[in-house]
Length: 87
Image (cartoon, rainbow, N blue to C red; front, side):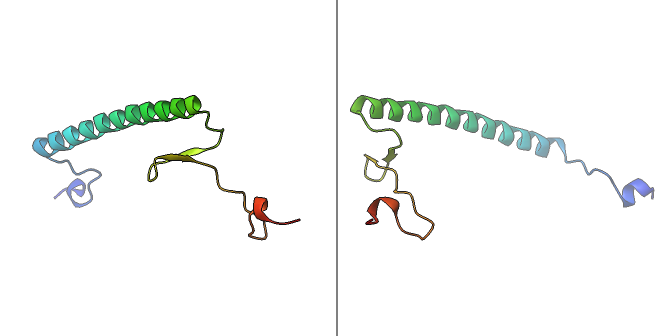
């Protein structure tokens, strides 16, 4: 037995397994590209819809209620919300 067999630096897989892995990686790449396109389309649509409706900057679409919602009030260092604290 050679030293290569006892302590290999690579263990090759067979051609069938390599082909399956490559096919799956290609499918993942196509899915990722499709997801990126869909995300860009969704973002453009939501931004255009918000602009057309006069939604203020910083508001976000809440998909659960299908409504644009105001950003949360900033939290002060003491844990209170800044907009609701009486002076």
